[in-house]
Length: 71
Image (cartoon, rainbow, N blue to C red; front, side, top):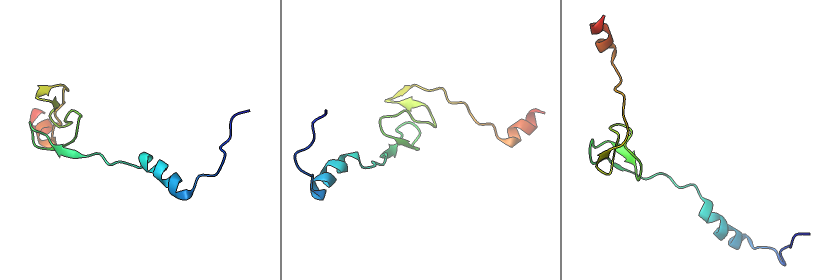
């Protein structure tokens, strides 16, 4: 049999414990390379740079005009 708590936790103490698991919003900062907002401690999704180095290969999105000009 598993051990059981000796007495009930008060709602205040319960709330103190649960505050740790609250939803934390991601803090965004400006990318030093391109200036667009990015999540801190992550590579920028628009330019692919992290800590001054190119980490991700970003494919450029072609506009309709570019596609029409090729044909």
